Image (cartoon, rainbow, N blue to C red):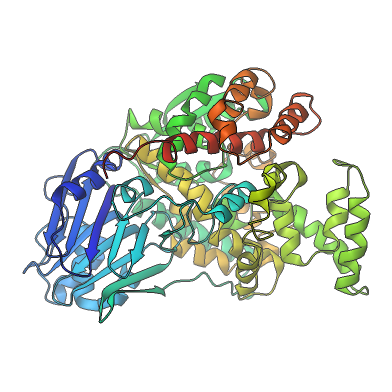
Length: 633
Protein backbone atom coordinates (compact mmCIF):
# COMPACT_ATOMS: atom_id res chain seq x y z
CA UNK A 1 0.00 0.00 0.00
CA UNK A 2 1.24 3.43 -0.85
CA UNK A 3 0.46 7.12 -1.20
CA UNK A 4 0.38 8.97 -4.52
CA UNK A 5 0.25 12.65 -5.49
CA UNK A 6 0.94 14.82 -8.50
CA UNK A 7 0.16 17.81 -10.70
CA UNK A 8 -0.44 18.59 -14.36
CA UNK A 9 -0.23 22.20 -15.64
CA UNK A 10 -1.66 23.42 -18.92
CA UNK A 11 1.22 25.80 -19.71
CA UNK A 12 4.03 23.29 -19.07
CA UNK A 13 5.54 25.52 -16.41
CA UNK A 14 8.21 23.84 -14.25
CA UNK A 15 6.95 21.76 -11.34
CA UNK A 16 8.65 22.36 -8.03
CA UNK A 17 10.18 19.19 -6.64
CA UNK A 18 9.79 20.74 -3.19
CA UNK A 19 6.02 20.94 -3.74
CA UNK A 20 5.79 17.27 -4.73
CA UNK A 21 7.99 16.37 -1.76
CA UNK A 22 5.65 18.23 0.60
CA UNK A 23 2.59 16.58 -0.87
CA UNK A 24 4.02 13.08 -0.67
CA UNK A 25 5.51 13.88 2.73
CA UNK A 26 1.98 14.35 4.04
CA UNK A 27 1.36 10.73 2.97
CA UNK A 28 4.38 9.22 4.70
CA UNK A 29 2.14 7.07 6.92
CA UNK A 30 0.85 5.36 3.77
CA UNK A 31 4.37 4.58 2.62
CA UNK A 32 7.14 4.77 5.23
CA UNK A 33 9.61 2.62 3.23
CA UNK A 34 10.63 5.11 0.55
CA UNK A 35 9.72 7.92 -1.80
CA UNK A 36 10.13 8.71 -5.48
CA UNK A 37 9.44 11.49 -7.98
CA UNK A 38 9.20 12.01 -11.71
CA UNK A 39 9.14 15.50 -13.22
CA UNK A 40 8.69 16.74 -16.78
CA UNK A 41 7.67 20.18 -18.04
CA UNK A 42 4.24 20.82 -16.57
CA UNK A 43 4.01 17.40 -14.88
CA UNK A 44 5.03 16.03 -11.52
CA UNK A 45 4.36 12.58 -10.03
CA UNK A 46 5.16 11.61 -6.46
CA UNK A 47 5.02 8.37 -4.52
CA UNK A 48 5.41 7.04 -0.97
CA UNK A 49 6.04 3.30 -0.74
CA UNK A 50 4.97 0.60 1.68
CA UNK A 51 6.96 -2.40 0.46
CA UNK A 52 4.77 -5.49 0.02
CA UNK A 53 5.79 -7.22 -3.25
CA UNK A 54 9.27 -7.19 -4.88
CA UNK A 55 10.88 -5.43 -1.93
CA UNK A 56 14.14 -4.65 -3.74
CA UNK A 57 12.96 -3.42 -7.15
CA UNK A 58 9.46 -2.00 -6.81
CA UNK A 59 10.33 1.68 -6.51
CA UNK A 60 7.93 4.22 -8.01
CA UNK A 61 7.11 6.16 -10.09
CA UNK A 62 7.85 3.34 -12.54
CA UNK A 63 8.34 3.63 -16.31
CA UNK A 64 8.13 1.51 -19.45
CA UNK A 65 11.24 0.57 -21.43
CA UNK A 66 11.75 3.92 -23.17
CA UNK A 67 10.58 6.18 -20.34
CA UNK A 68 7.57 7.58 -22.19
CA UNK A 69 4.98 6.21 -19.74
CA UNK A 70 5.19 6.59 -15.97
CA UNK A 71 2.88 5.38 -13.19
CA UNK A 72 2.43 6.11 -9.50
CA UNK A 73 0.25 3.42 -7.94
CA UNK A 74 -1.48 2.65 -4.66
CA UNK A 75 -2.88 -0.85 -4.14
CA UNK A 76 -2.41 -4.46 -5.14
CA UNK A 77 -3.03 -6.25 -8.45
CA UNK A 78 -3.87 -9.84 -7.49
CA UNK A 79 -3.73 -11.26 -11.01
CA UNK A 80 -0.40 -9.64 -11.85
CA UNK A 81 1.42 -12.93 -12.42
CA UNK A 82 -1.08 -14.08 -15.05
CA UNK A 83 -1.22 -10.59 -16.51
CA UNK A 84 2.56 -10.43 -16.65
CA UNK A 85 2.70 -13.74 -18.53
CA UNK A 86 0.18 -12.55 -21.12
CA UNK A 87 2.00 -9.25 -21.61
CA UNK A 88 5.33 -11.00 -22.13
CA UNK A 89 3.71 -13.28 -24.70
CA UNK A 90 2.54 -10.12 -26.46
CA UNK A 91 6.13 -8.85 -26.67
CA UNK A 92 6.48 -6.65 -23.60
CA UNK A 93 9.71 -6.68 -21.60
CA UNK A 94 9.17 -6.43 -17.84
CA UNK A 95 12.24 -5.70 -15.73
CA UNK A 96 10.89 -6.19 -12.19
CA UNK A 97 8.79 -8.73 -10.32
CA UNK A 98 6.35 -6.10 -9.03
CA UNK A 99 2.66 -5.82 -9.80
CA UNK A 100 3.13 -2.10 -10.54
CA UNK A 101 4.98 -2.69 -13.78
CA UNK A 102 2.09 -4.69 -15.23
CA UNK A 103 -0.06 -1.53 -15.13
CA UNK A 104 2.36 0.36 -17.38
CA UNK A 105 2.49 -2.40 -19.97
CA UNK A 106 -1.24 -3.13 -19.75
CA UNK A 107 -1.80 0.52 -20.69
CA UNK A 108 0.66 0.20 -23.58
CA UNK A 109 -1.20 -2.88 -24.79
CA UNK A 110 -4.83 -1.95 -24.14
CA UNK A 111 -4.96 1.84 -23.78
CA UNK A 112 -7.78 3.23 -21.67
CA UNK A 113 -9.38 -0.21 -21.34
CA UNK A 114 -6.34 -1.47 -19.41
CA UNK A 115 -8.27 -1.10 -16.18
CA UNK A 116 -10.61 -3.89 -17.30
CA UNK A 117 -7.65 -6.30 -17.12
CA UNK A 118 -6.67 -5.36 -13.55
CA UNK A 119 -7.98 -7.58 -10.76
CA UNK A 120 -7.42 -5.94 -7.41
CA UNK A 121 -7.68 -2.80 -5.32
CA UNK A 122 -6.05 0.29 -6.77
CA UNK A 123 -5.83 4.00 -7.37
CA UNK A 124 -3.17 5.14 -9.80
CA UNK A 125 -2.09 7.98 -12.07
CA UNK A 126 -0.28 7.25 -15.31
CA UNK A 127 1.50 9.89 -17.39
CA UNK A 128 1.59 9.21 -21.13
CA UNK A 129 4.32 11.55 -22.31
CA UNK A 130 3.99 10.70 -25.98
CA UNK A 131 0.35 11.80 -26.01
CA UNK A 132 0.65 14.40 -23.24
CA UNK A 133 -2.22 12.91 -21.25
CA UNK A 134 -2.73 11.91 -17.65
CA UNK A 135 -4.76 8.75 -17.04
CA UNK A 136 -6.16 8.03 -13.56
CA UNK A 137 -8.21 5.08 -12.34
CA UNK A 138 -9.87 3.82 -9.16
CA UNK A 139 -10.83 0.23 -8.37
CA UNK A 140 -14.33 -1.08 -8.90
CA UNK A 141 -15.78 -0.60 -5.41
CA UNK A 142 -13.58 2.19 -4.05
CA UNK A 143 -11.23 0.33 -1.73
CA UNK A 144 -8.47 2.82 -2.46
CA UNK A 145 -9.07 6.61 -2.42
CA UNK A 146 -8.26 9.25 -5.04
CA UNK A 147 -8.97 12.98 -4.65
CA UNK A 148 -8.47 15.72 -7.22
CA UNK A 149 -8.76 19.44 -7.87
CA UNK A 150 -9.34 20.65 -11.41
CA UNK A 151 -9.57 23.87 -13.33
CA UNK A 152 -8.58 24.58 -16.92
CA UNK A 153 -5.07 25.55 -15.89
CA UNK A 154 -4.15 22.83 -13.42
CA UNK A 155 -5.05 19.36 -12.23
CA UNK A 156 -3.88 18.22 -8.79
CA UNK A 157 -4.41 14.73 -7.34
CA UNK A 158 -3.53 12.78 -4.21
CA UNK A 159 -4.47 9.73 -2.16
CA UNK A 160 -5.68 11.96 0.67
CA UNK A 161 -7.04 15.47 1.01
CA UNK A 162 -4.28 16.57 3.36
CA UNK A 163 -1.73 16.20 0.56
CA UNK A 164 -3.94 17.95 -1.98
CA UNK A 165 -4.40 20.93 0.31
CA UNK A 166 -0.66 21.58 0.33
CA UNK A 167 -0.84 22.78 -3.27
CA UNK A 168 -1.19 26.60 -3.27
CA UNK A 169 -3.92 26.51 -5.93
CA UNK A 170 -6.30 24.35 -3.88
CA UNK A 171 -8.62 26.34 -1.63
CA UNK A 172 -10.46 25.43 1.56
CA UNK A 173 -13.87 26.90 0.79
CA UNK A 174 -16.37 24.92 2.84
CA UNK A 175 -19.26 23.24 1.04
CA UNK A 176 -22.22 23.68 3.39
CA UNK A 177 -24.29 21.13 1.49
CA UNK A 178 -21.55 18.60 2.23
CA UNK A 179 -21.84 19.54 5.91
CA UNK A 180 -25.56 18.82 5.70
CA UNK A 181 -24.84 15.46 4.12
CA UNK A 182 -22.42 14.65 6.92
CA UNK A 183 -25.02 15.45 9.57
CA UNK A 184 -27.61 13.27 7.84
CA UNK A 185 -25.56 10.30 6.63
CA UNK A 186 -22.44 10.43 8.79
CA UNK A 187 -20.27 10.71 5.67
CA UNK A 188 -20.08 12.80 2.49
CA UNK A 189 -21.42 10.69 -0.39
CA UNK A 190 -20.83 10.50 -4.14
CA UNK A 191 -17.97 12.52 -5.66
CA UNK A 192 -18.31 15.45 -3.26
CA UNK A 193 -15.94 16.46 -0.46
CA UNK A 194 -16.20 18.92 2.41
CA UNK A 195 -14.38 21.46 0.20
CA UNK A 196 -16.27 23.01 -2.68
CA UNK A 197 -13.65 22.63 -5.42
CA UNK A 198 -12.24 19.22 -4.48
CA UNK A 199 -13.72 16.00 -5.82
CA UNK A 200 -13.28 12.23 -5.48
CA UNK A 201 -12.86 10.00 -8.50
CA UNK A 202 -15.82 7.65 -8.14
CA UNK A 203 -15.28 3.89 -7.74
CA UNK A 204 -15.33 1.98 -11.02
CA UNK A 205 -14.28 5.09 -12.97
CA UNK A 206 -11.22 6.29 -14.83
CA UNK A 207 -10.37 9.83 -15.86
CA UNK A 208 -8.33 11.34 -18.67
CA UNK A 209 -6.77 14.81 -18.47
CA UNK A 210 -5.27 16.26 -21.64
CA UNK A 211 -4.70 19.63 -23.28
CA UNK A 212 -7.27 21.43 -25.39
CA UNK A 213 -7.21 24.84 -27.06
CA UNK A 214 -8.45 26.51 -23.85
CA UNK A 215 -6.29 24.63 -21.36
CA UNK A 216 -6.76 21.32 -19.61
CA UNK A 217 -9.74 19.08 -20.30
CA UNK A 218 -11.04 16.46 -17.86
CA UNK A 219 -13.20 13.53 -18.92
CA UNK A 220 -14.40 10.75 -16.62
CA UNK A 221 -15.65 7.34 -17.70
CA UNK A 222 -17.58 4.56 -15.93
CA UNK A 223 -15.87 1.22 -16.64
CA UNK A 224 -17.61 -1.18 -14.19
CA UNK A 225 -20.98 -1.59 -12.54
CA UNK A 226 -22.58 -4.25 -10.36
CA UNK A 227 -25.55 -5.84 -12.12
CA UNK A 228 -28.16 -7.89 -10.28
CA UNK A 229 -29.25 -10.66 -12.63
CA UNK A 230 -30.52 -13.59 -10.56
CA UNK A 231 -29.88 -17.10 -11.85
CA UNK A 232 -32.88 -19.15 -10.75
CA UNK A 233 -31.74 -22.38 -12.40
CA UNK A 234 -29.21 -23.25 -9.69
CA UNK A 235 -30.14 -24.95 -6.45
CA UNK A 236 -29.15 -23.71 -3.02
CA UNK A 237 -26.57 -26.53 -2.82
CA UNK A 238 -25.06 -25.40 -6.14
CA UNK A 239 -24.77 -21.82 -4.89
CA UNK A 240 -23.04 -22.98 -1.70
CA UNK A 241 -20.55 -25.14 -3.63
CA UNK A 242 -19.84 -22.38 -6.11
CA UNK A 243 -19.31 -19.81 -3.37
CA UNK A 244 -16.98 -22.14 -1.49
CA UNK A 245 -14.81 -22.68 -4.57
CA UNK A 246 -14.73 -18.96 -5.36
CA UNK A 247 -13.78 -17.91 -1.83
CA UNK A 248 -11.03 -20.53 -1.65
CA UNK A 249 -9.42 -19.06 -4.77
CA UNK A 250 -10.08 -15.43 -3.83
CA UNK A 251 -8.75 -15.58 -0.29
CA UNK A 252 -5.64 -17.42 -1.45
CA UNK A 253 -4.96 -14.79 -4.12
CA UNK A 254 -5.31 -12.04 -1.49
CA UNK A 255 -2.62 -13.73 0.62
CA UNK A 256 0.15 -13.06 -1.92
CA UNK A 257 2.83 -11.06 -0.10
CA UNK A 258 6.56 -10.83 0.48
CA UNK A 259 5.98 -9.58 4.06
CA UNK A 260 4.18 -11.05 7.11
CA UNK A 261 0.39 -11.31 6.79
CA UNK A 262 -2.49 -11.78 9.25
CA UNK A 263 -6.22 -11.17 9.67
CA UNK A 264 -8.68 -9.05 11.62
CA UNK A 265 -10.97 -11.36 13.60
CA UNK A 266 -14.01 -9.69 15.15
CA UNK A 267 -15.96 -12.82 16.03
CA UNK A 268 -18.59 -12.04 13.40
CA UNK A 269 -19.37 -14.25 10.42
CA UNK A 270 -17.49 -12.28 7.76
CA UNK A 271 -14.06 -12.06 9.38
CA UNK A 272 -14.41 -15.60 10.74
CA UNK A 273 -15.12 -16.85 7.21
CA UNK A 274 -11.98 -15.15 5.88
CA UNK A 275 -9.86 -16.61 8.70
CA UNK A 276 -11.25 -20.09 8.02
CA UNK A 277 -10.25 -19.97 4.36
CA UNK A 278 -6.86 -18.43 5.21
CA UNK A 279 -6.14 -21.23 7.66
CA UNK A 280 -7.00 -23.83 5.04
CA UNK A 281 -4.67 -22.17 2.52
CA UNK A 282 -1.71 -21.70 4.88
CA UNK A 283 0.85 -24.22 6.08
CA UNK A 284 1.56 -22.05 9.14
CA UNK A 285 -0.73 -20.70 11.87
CA UNK A 286 -2.48 -17.49 10.81
CA UNK A 287 -1.94 -14.43 13.00
CA UNK A 288 -5.29 -12.99 14.11
CA UNK A 289 -6.11 -9.73 15.90
CA UNK A 290 -9.14 -8.74 17.98
CA UNK A 291 -10.11 -5.81 20.19
CA UNK A 292 -12.76 -5.83 22.91
CA UNK A 293 -14.49 -3.70 25.55
CA UNK A 294 -15.37 -4.12 29.21
CA UNK A 295 -19.05 -3.57 28.35
CA UNK A 296 -20.44 -7.08 27.58
CA UNK A 297 -22.98 -5.89 24.99
CA UNK A 298 -20.11 -4.56 22.84
CA UNK A 299 -17.48 -7.21 23.52
CA UNK A 300 -16.80 -9.89 20.90
CA UNK A 301 -13.59 -11.27 22.39
CA UNK A 302 -15.12 -14.62 23.50
CA UNK A 303 -16.54 -15.25 20.01
CA UNK A 304 -13.26 -14.41 18.31
CA UNK A 305 -11.36 -16.70 20.69
CA UNK A 306 -13.64 -19.58 19.74
CA UNK A 307 -12.76 -19.19 16.06
CA UNK A 308 -9.06 -18.68 16.83
CA UNK A 309 -9.01 -21.89 18.87
CA UNK A 310 -10.81 -23.86 16.18
CA UNK A 311 -8.26 -22.87 13.53
CA UNK A 312 -5.19 -22.78 15.77
CA UNK A 313 -4.33 -19.18 14.99
CA UNK A 314 -1.67 -17.12 16.71
CA UNK A 315 -4.21 -14.89 18.41
CA UNK A 316 -3.69 -11.38 19.83
CA UNK A 317 -6.18 -9.27 21.81
CA UNK A 318 -6.50 -5.71 23.13
CA UNK A 319 -9.06 -4.22 25.54
CA UNK A 320 -10.15 -0.65 24.67
CA UNK A 321 -10.95 1.82 27.48
CA UNK A 322 -13.00 5.07 27.50
CA UNK A 323 -9.83 7.16 27.22
CA UNK A 324 -9.76 6.01 23.61
CA UNK A 325 -11.71 9.21 22.86
CA UNK A 326 -8.35 10.99 23.06
CA UNK A 327 -7.81 9.63 19.56
CA UNK A 328 -10.37 12.04 18.16
CA UNK A 329 -7.98 14.86 17.19
CA UNK A 330 -5.66 12.38 15.48
CA UNK A 331 -8.55 10.72 13.61
CA UNK A 332 -9.95 14.10 12.54
CA UNK A 333 -6.59 14.95 11.01
CA UNK A 334 -6.15 11.55 9.39
CA UNK A 335 -9.62 11.23 7.90
CA UNK A 336 -9.40 14.69 6.25
CA UNK A 337 -13.17 15.12 6.26
CA UNK A 338 -15.84 14.94 8.98
CA UNK A 339 -16.55 11.26 9.61
CA UNK A 340 -19.51 10.04 11.62
CA UNK A 341 -18.69 6.37 12.17
CA UNK A 342 -17.28 5.92 15.68
CA UNK A 343 -16.04 2.42 14.83
CA UNK A 344 -13.02 4.27 13.46
CA UNK A 345 -11.70 3.98 17.03
CA UNK A 346 -11.65 0.16 17.30
CA UNK A 347 -10.50 -0.05 13.66
CA UNK A 348 -7.48 2.09 14.51
CA UNK A 349 -6.69 0.08 17.63
CA UNK A 350 -6.93 -3.30 15.93
CA UNK A 351 -4.76 -1.94 13.09
CA UNK A 352 -2.17 -0.72 15.56
CA UNK A 353 -2.20 -4.10 17.27
CA UNK A 354 -1.80 -5.94 13.97
CA UNK A 355 0.99 -3.64 12.72
CA UNK A 356 3.19 -4.65 15.63
CA UNK A 357 3.22 -8.18 14.17
CA UNK A 358 2.47 -8.00 10.42
CA UNK A 359 2.41 -5.58 7.47
CA UNK A 360 -0.68 -6.94 5.69
CA UNK A 361 -4.07 -8.09 7.02
CA UNK A 362 -7.21 -9.50 5.46
CA UNK A 363 -10.55 -8.27 6.80
CA UNK A 364 -14.16 -9.39 6.44
CA UNK A 365 -15.53 -6.03 5.31
CA UNK A 366 -18.16 -6.17 2.59
CA UNK A 367 -19.98 -9.34 3.60
CA UNK A 368 -23.14 -7.50 4.62
CA UNK A 369 -23.36 -5.64 1.31
CA UNK A 370 -22.58 -8.73 -0.77
CA UNK A 371 -24.83 -11.22 1.02
CA UNK A 372 -27.56 -8.93 2.47
CA UNK A 373 -26.64 -9.04 6.15
CA UNK A 374 -27.74 -5.67 7.49
CA UNK A 375 -30.63 -5.56 9.95
CA UNK A 376 -32.02 -2.52 8.13
CA UNK A 377 -32.79 -4.75 5.14
CA UNK A 378 -35.16 -6.76 7.34
CA UNK A 379 -36.71 -3.65 8.87
CA UNK A 380 -37.31 -2.13 5.45
CA UNK A 381 -38.74 -5.37 4.08
CA UNK A 382 -41.25 -5.52 6.93
CA UNK A 383 -42.43 -1.97 6.21
CA UNK A 384 -42.66 -2.63 2.47
CA UNK A 385 -44.99 -5.57 3.18
CA UNK A 386 -47.27 -3.23 5.13
CA UNK A 387 -47.15 -0.73 2.28
CA UNK A 388 -48.29 -3.40 -0.18
CA UNK A 389 -51.50 -3.79 1.79
CA UNK A 390 -52.18 -0.08 1.24
CA UNK A 391 -51.70 -0.09 -2.52
CA UNK A 392 -55.39 0.70 -2.97
CA UNK A 393 -54.62 4.23 -1.68
CA UNK A 394 -52.93 6.77 -4.00
CA UNK A 395 -49.29 7.44 -3.04
CA UNK A 396 -49.93 11.16 -2.63
CA UNK A 397 -52.80 10.48 -0.23
CA UNK A 398 -50.73 7.99 1.80
CA UNK A 399 -47.91 10.51 2.08
CA UNK A 400 -50.19 13.22 3.48
CA UNK A 401 -52.30 10.95 5.68
CA UNK A 402 -49.57 8.96 7.40
CA UNK A 403 -47.24 11.94 7.59
CA UNK A 404 -49.85 13.89 9.56
CA UNK A 405 -50.55 10.93 11.83
CA UNK A 406 -46.85 10.43 12.57
CA UNK A 407 -46.27 14.12 13.31
CA UNK A 408 -49.15 14.12 15.78
CA UNK A 409 -47.39 11.58 18.01
CA UNK A 410 -44.83 12.62 20.66
CA UNK A 411 -41.13 11.99 19.89
CA UNK A 412 -39.88 8.43 20.45
CA UNK A 413 -43.41 6.98 20.48
CA UNK A 414 -43.13 3.28 19.54
CA UNK A 415 -44.27 2.76 15.97
CA UNK A 416 -44.02 6.42 14.98
CA UNK A 417 -41.25 5.72 12.48
CA UNK A 418 -43.15 2.85 10.86
CA UNK A 419 -46.26 5.01 10.59
CA UNK A 420 -44.28 7.77 8.91
CA UNK A 421 -42.76 5.34 6.41
CA UNK A 422 -46.13 4.03 5.26
CA UNK A 423 -46.47 7.21 3.22
CA UNK A 424 -43.07 6.92 1.57
CA UNK A 425 -41.74 5.34 -1.61
CA UNK A 426 -39.64 2.17 -1.32
CA UNK A 427 -36.37 4.10 -1.62
CA UNK A 428 -37.46 6.77 0.86
CA UNK A 429 -38.44 4.01 3.27
CA UNK A 430 -34.98 2.47 3.14
CA UNK A 431 -33.25 5.83 3.52
CA UNK A 432 -35.47 6.64 6.47
CA UNK A 433 -34.63 3.32 8.13
CA UNK A 434 -30.91 3.71 7.43
CA UNK A 435 -30.39 7.44 8.03
CA UNK A 436 -33.32 9.66 8.86
CA UNK A 437 -34.43 8.31 12.22
CA UNK A 438 -35.38 11.14 14.57
CA UNK A 439 -32.55 10.80 17.07
CA UNK A 440 -29.82 11.12 14.41
CA UNK A 441 -31.22 13.91 12.26
CA UNK A 442 -28.93 16.75 13.29
CA UNK A 443 -30.15 19.37 10.84
CA UNK A 444 -32.23 20.79 13.70
CA UNK A 445 -28.97 21.92 15.30
CA UNK A 446 -27.92 24.27 12.51
CA UNK A 447 -28.30 28.01 12.95
CA UNK A 448 -31.15 29.38 10.88
CA UNK A 449 -28.96 31.41 8.50
CA UNK A 450 -27.06 28.25 7.55
CA UNK A 451 -30.19 26.14 7.35
CA UNK A 452 -31.92 28.49 4.93
CA UNK A 453 -29.00 28.28 2.50
CA UNK A 454 -29.30 24.51 2.18
CA UNK A 455 -31.40 22.37 -0.06
CA UNK A 456 -33.64 19.81 1.62
CA UNK A 457 -33.05 16.06 1.87
CA UNK A 458 -29.33 16.08 1.09
CA UNK A 459 -28.41 13.72 -1.73
CA UNK A 460 -31.77 11.91 -1.71
CA UNK A 461 -32.30 12.37 -5.45
CA UNK A 462 -28.91 10.88 -6.27
CA UNK A 463 -29.59 8.00 -3.89
CA UNK A 464 -32.94 7.39 -5.54
CA UNK A 465 -31.22 7.25 -8.94
CA UNK A 466 -28.90 4.53 -7.64
CA UNK A 467 -31.86 2.69 -6.13
CA UNK A 468 -33.64 2.72 -9.48
CA UNK A 469 -30.55 1.74 -11.46
CA UNK A 470 -30.32 -1.82 -10.08
CA UNK A 471 -31.16 -4.11 -12.96
CA UNK A 472 -33.35 -6.48 -10.93
CA UNK A 473 -36.54 -4.85 -9.74
CA UNK A 474 -36.79 -6.40 -6.28
CA UNK A 475 -36.22 -4.02 -3.33
CA UNK A 476 -33.50 -6.09 -1.62
CA UNK A 477 -31.21 -5.93 -4.66
CA UNK A 478 -31.82 -2.21 -4.91
CA UNK A 479 -30.90 -1.68 -1.27
CA UNK A 480 -27.70 -3.67 -1.76
CA UNK A 481 -26.85 -1.72 -4.90
CA UNK A 482 -27.43 1.61 -3.18
CA UNK A 483 -25.22 0.62 -0.24
CA UNK A 484 -22.48 -0.60 -2.59
CA UNK A 485 -22.45 2.83 -4.26
CA UNK A 486 -22.65 4.99 -1.14
CA UNK A 487 -22.28 3.58 2.37
CA UNK A 488 -19.67 0.98 1.43
CA UNK A 489 -17.05 3.23 -0.21
CA UNK A 490 -17.66 6.39 1.80
CA UNK A 491 -18.08 4.88 5.26
CA UNK A 492 -16.83 1.31 5.56
CA UNK A 493 -13.90 1.43 3.13
CA UNK A 494 -12.89 4.98 4.06
CA UNK A 495 -12.75 3.94 7.71
CA UNK A 496 -10.63 0.86 7.04
CA UNK A 497 -8.28 2.63 4.64
CA UNK A 498 -7.57 5.66 6.83
CA UNK A 499 -7.36 3.82 10.14
CA UNK A 500 -5.09 1.06 8.83
CA UNK A 501 -2.92 3.43 6.80
CA UNK A 502 -2.42 5.61 9.86
CA UNK A 503 -0.47 2.67 11.27
CA UNK A 504 1.19 1.85 7.89
CA UNK A 505 -0.79 -1.39 7.65
CA UNK A 506 -2.20 -2.72 4.38
CA UNK A 507 -5.75 -4.05 4.68
CA UNK A 508 -7.21 -6.31 1.99
CA UNK A 509 -10.90 -7.17 1.57
CA UNK A 510 -11.44 -10.49 -0.26
CA UNK A 511 -15.23 -10.43 0.19
CA UNK A 512 -15.22 -7.29 -1.99
CA UNK A 513 -13.31 -8.87 -4.81
CA UNK A 514 -15.37 -7.91 -7.85
CA UNK A 515 -15.78 -11.55 -8.85
CA UNK A 516 -17.27 -12.33 -5.42
CA UNK A 517 -19.64 -9.37 -5.73
CA UNK A 518 -20.70 -10.40 -9.23
CA UNK A 519 -21.30 -13.97 -8.05
CA UNK A 520 -23.37 -12.80 -5.09
CA UNK A 521 -25.40 -10.47 -7.32
CA UNK A 522 -26.59 -13.52 -9.29
CA UNK A 523 -27.94 -15.27 -6.18
CA UNK A 524 -31.74 -14.80 -6.10
CA UNK A 525 -32.89 -12.56 -3.28
CA UNK A 526 -34.96 -15.31 -1.66
CA UNK A 527 -31.71 -17.28 -1.23
CA UNK A 528 -29.96 -14.31 0.40
CA UNK A 529 -32.79 -13.15 2.63
CA UNK A 530 -35.09 -15.77 4.15
CA UNK A 531 -37.39 -15.95 7.17
CA UNK A 532 -36.51 -12.41 8.20
CA UNK A 533 -32.74 -13.00 8.17
CA UNK A 534 -30.03 -12.22 5.67
CA UNK A 535 -27.00 -14.18 4.44
CA UNK A 536 -28.92 -17.44 3.94
CA UNK A 537 -26.54 -18.99 1.37
CA UNK A 538 -23.51 -17.50 3.11
CA UNK A 539 -24.53 -19.08 6.42
CA UNK A 540 -25.12 -22.44 4.76
CA UNK A 541 -21.57 -22.29 3.47
CA UNK A 542 -20.30 -21.58 6.98
CA UNK A 543 -22.06 -24.54 8.60
CA UNK A 544 -19.00 -26.73 8.03
CA UNK A 545 -16.52 -23.98 8.87
CA UNK A 546 -17.71 -22.30 12.09
CA UNK A 547 -19.33 -23.28 15.41
CA UNK A 548 -23.14 -23.38 15.35
CA UNK A 549 -23.23 -20.96 18.29
CA UNK A 550 -21.54 -18.36 16.10
CA UNK A 551 -23.97 -18.85 13.23
CA UNK A 552 -27.07 -18.52 15.42
CA UNK A 553 -26.10 -15.63 17.67
CA UNK A 554 -27.58 -12.16 17.01
CA UNK A 555 -25.62 -9.84 14.75
CA UNK A 556 -23.34 -7.44 16.63
CA UNK A 557 -21.92 -4.43 14.83
CA UNK A 558 -18.29 -3.39 15.16
CA UNK A 559 -19.14 -0.52 17.49
CA UNK A 560 -17.92 1.45 20.48
CA UNK A 561 -19.84 1.67 23.79
CA UNK A 562 -20.34 5.40 23.38
CA UNK A 563 -23.91 5.04 24.64
CA UNK A 564 -22.38 4.28 28.07
CA UNK A 565 -19.29 6.49 27.86
CA UNK A 566 -21.14 9.70 26.95
CA UNK A 567 -23.36 9.35 30.03
CA UNK A 568 -20.51 9.19 32.52
CA UNK A 569 -16.83 8.87 31.59
CA UNK A 570 -16.89 11.31 28.66
CA UNK A 571 -19.65 13.74 29.63
CA UNK A 572 -17.26 16.38 30.97
CA UNK A 573 -14.91 16.01 28.01
CA UNK A 574 -17.81 16.40 25.60
CA UNK A 575 -19.05 19.61 27.20
CA UNK A 576 -15.54 21.07 27.34
CA UNK A 577 -15.07 20.54 23.59
CA UNK A 578 -18.53 21.47 22.28
CA UNK A 579 -18.97 24.53 24.49
CA UNK A 580 -15.44 25.86 24.21
CA UNK A 581 -15.27 29.51 23.08
CA UNK A 582 -13.89 28.70 19.63
CA UNK A 583 -16.51 26.03 19.05
CA UNK A 584 -19.35 28.42 19.92
CA UNK A 585 -17.82 31.24 17.87
CA UNK A 586 -18.00 29.18 14.69
CA UNK A 587 -21.74 29.70 14.58
CA UNK A 588 -22.64 26.37 12.97
CA UNK A 589 -24.84 24.95 15.74
CA UNK A 590 -27.37 26.37 18.20
CA UNK A 591 -26.10 25.93 21.76
CA UNK A 592 -29.56 25.19 23.19
CA UNK A 593 -30.05 22.39 20.68
CA UNK A 594 -26.67 20.84 21.50
CA UNK A 595 -27.54 21.08 25.21
CA UNK A 596 -30.79 19.29 24.45
CA UNK A 597 -29.00 16.43 22.70
CA UNK A 598 -26.58 15.94 25.58
CA UNK A 599 -29.31 16.08 28.21
CA UNK A 600 -31.59 13.71 26.34
CA UNK A 601 -28.76 11.20 26.14
CA UNK A 602 -27.66 11.65 29.76
CA UNK A 603 -31.16 11.01 31.05
CA UNK A 604 -31.54 7.93 28.86
CA UNK A 605 -34.53 9.28 26.94
CA UNK A 606 -32.86 8.35 23.66
CA UNK A 607 -29.51 7.09 22.45
CA UNK A 608 -27.89 10.22 20.97
CA UNK A 609 -24.35 8.83 21.12
CA UNK A 610 -23.94 8.82 17.32
CA UNK A 611 -25.09 12.44 17.14
CA UNK A 612 -22.69 13.49 19.88
CA UNK A 613 -19.85 11.73 18.10
CA UNK A 614 -20.61 13.63 14.88
CA UNK A 615 -20.54 16.96 16.70
CA UNK A 616 -17.27 16.14 18.48
CA UNK A 617 -15.58 14.88 15.33
CA UNK A 618 -16.66 17.95 13.35
CA UNK A 619 -15.29 20.30 16.00
CA UNK A 620 -11.91 18.57 16.03
CA UNK A 621 -11.90 18.57 12.23
CA UNK A 622 -12.55 22.34 12.24
CA UNK A 623 -9.65 22.89 14.62
CA UNK A 624 -7.23 21.15 12.31
CA UNK A 625 -8.46 22.11 8.84
CA UNK A 626 -10.18 25.46 9.33
CA UNK A 627 -8.31 27.02 12.26
CA UNK A 628 -4.77 25.97 11.37
CA UNK A 629 -2.57 28.29 9.35
CA UNK A 630 -1.34 26.65 6.18
CA UNK A 631 2.31 27.58 6.53
CA UNK A 632 3.40 25.58 3.50
CA UNK A 633 1.63 27.84 1.01
